[in-house]
Image (cartoon, rainbow over the protein chains, first blue to last red):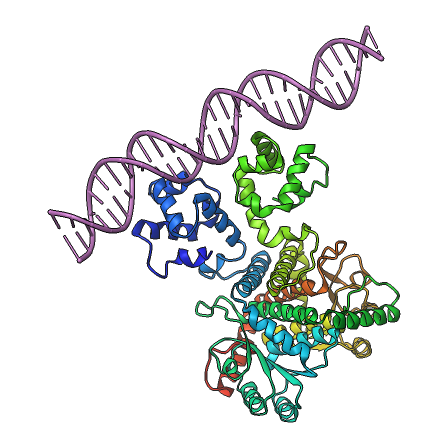
Length: 287
Length: 287
DNA sequence: CATTCATGAAAATAAATTTCTCCTCTGCGT
DNA sequence: ACGCAGAGGAGAAATTTATTTTCATGAATG
């Protein structure tokens, strides 16, 4: 399914002409998607059968299958292979940001470890109390969001963004507590210190962070988010969307782990909001 | 270009068989995208020429053009026409949330008012001081994010989520201040009160909210985010992605409105972080 | 020198569109 | 009410176009 990877030919499995084709395709996705095999062959200076073989080698069933897969990726997946151009007009900025956010979500979906998420959800659902630790702007947002999602589901949860505080909270954590940590870089040493302490004290920990990082190593359950960084395409900005998506999935799984509890809590909040505001129940649960 | 709209046949321009086709397509996008005109015609119980005519009427050049356009939309745009099914497995939950988040971003991109965003960006860039008002979980996150994005660009900004506080801050606002408000519902009456007060005092205001809402009416610049609500498909959860995307675009436009200032501020933050942490500059600006 | 692999020409197949014809419905005049 | 012209929808068959297969050739490798 990974056309994407295949086209960049990291394994060097393509022949010379096929490389040429791959290059042409990556540079002119729009053209390829809207042209026939004859046009493409003509433009690449090869024969149609070569194109067919190229598609097969890429793992597609046929040329049209290839075009389809390509078309499906263009919106979300392929653009980042192009060199980054300095965007200027508002329209370009908007397109760039939306595309990258969608890419981040796309990547999230591809690399999601559902087992880890499910395990995390059950841990959280079973906890008497949850501590959520983040730091700096991005992780702070993530743990606040976790707080915002989970308290609605009847979880007892506290979010904290202060390293010293986190350390004290870790030291004071009682059995039944589960700690959730977020670090985009995986190098938040303050968080690592907390996790080490918690492990000694047999308090279960869950982190959302980069795999192969100190934070990842120090936790019990890892929700890995690895966005390509080498090409500096996914700036922290768009990575946030992946984290946020992961939090939403996690929260949803927590809700489903005990639907009745979640429903009861949600209903209570909703009623209170409606009573408190002007009876307009079109309002969301939390503006 | 709007296949989407055409397929739902709101103008009633399709004939009986074409309606049948449209229906089939919406229900079985994956099938259609991967089948030939003959398969599709067979399954719909019509002749191939009818399918060709159907595609033309929808504004496509040919059947393959139609398939391409469809393929490009499926990932992001079409799914929400399907009736909501109760999702159960982690994989389904993940797919559902990712899809909806991407839909929200897709919708955001479609309906974005770039002029308003650009105007907002210039107002913010020119402000001596920015107050950002939100309330409840979602808008609080949004204004915090705005704070998190803009302080890096050298803006003086304060985010506040407390209605009473907001009112006091509004009353105390001096010339040169610009106020930014967020409300997902557009019915945050506390925010409306602030905006009214600010208008009297000639302090410029920007809001991100639903159009045709009290909040929208009370502000000078409106960044409208209207997500379909009737079908209850976009839960607040996924709408957040659209808001967050809009904030990112806005922040980026603010940066571009005065690149030097933004660069200088960013560089300063980066240096400080690197010096302060273990010299590992792979770290993002804010974990 | 044999084998493998890449490639294209030509043939065969499959797909899509055009043309032509028929049918149905609608509106209008008798 | 009846019939008739015209418009538009639909499919059969023919045509065109696109794609794949088969087969032959030539280059590279061991």
